[in-house]
Length: 107
Length: 281
Image 1 (cartoon, one colour):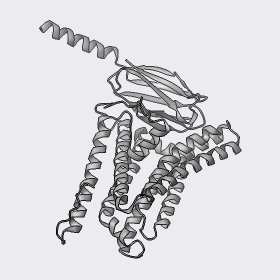
Image 2 (spheres, chains in turn cyan, orange):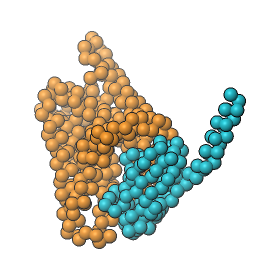
Image 3 (cartoon, chains in turn cyan, brown):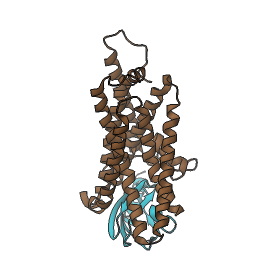
Image 4 (cartoon, one colour):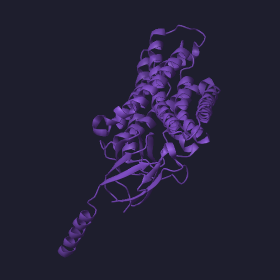
């Protein structure tokens, strides 16, 4: 029993160590996200810094992640998402939905 | 052009639904058209100011200015709608009874209408500033020709306004006996839905925990990005994947307004023998 608890504790702290990163950056250029696929830890609040390098404003939007934020041209915005359950979450730039698409994968 | 029309339509739709409901809910109050027009004008002017101050607003509160701004204007709308519904729960029937008799209770009528002005201004402001920013973006990107952009924006605007207009006209067809119940239920849901949206912005700003998120997922049935989802969201505060915190806000505001309405009606009826009307209508 004791050993089991210890093992559980160890794996938990190891898990926490492996998924330490909670800050992520995405750039918008020519109405496209880069990277357009990001892996984030599941079950944790994650900070996303979106750098809009275009001159035009964009709206970062995701219904599944419950995010909606206008990012003026040539500026950065911080967005907090999650904690997310494991799975894939799509996001779009609403002002340029045809090209500005991406997905966040929570693991 | 079609893309522009669609986005403008989606933005205008939400504001148009709110204006449609509020316009119907205030039928019979003298001078109402003036106040609604005033609210629209203030909202449009505000939209342009907010759109061009977007960058400044974004930088406030350590980059969370936009979230706080949105949550605040939604909060204002919730308080105003709550006040409206509580006021109407006492005066609505009285207004209908004396629909032709202008000037009755003018003082509180005017106060009520300034509330309506604020609600409409705030609704237009929120959706309008995004539309202005979007159109500005299209204009400076040079993707579409100027003419196509204006045409697309106009089509979207007319479409959105038309939906609000049909909702308004549809509500007016409801027989008088059910009319106040129908409009106050709609306003109640509108306010509760807005409170849930405000919660969402505070979660996004990392100021509130999301709690269980999502509580459920009906995006396979009606997705929030679909047209039906958008309409349901505007009317009932529908969210396909609500978080626990949003649910708490929705239920708390819903219950608080309902209790306020019951209390106001009881107080108004106090001198007379207890009325048979249940407080839950």
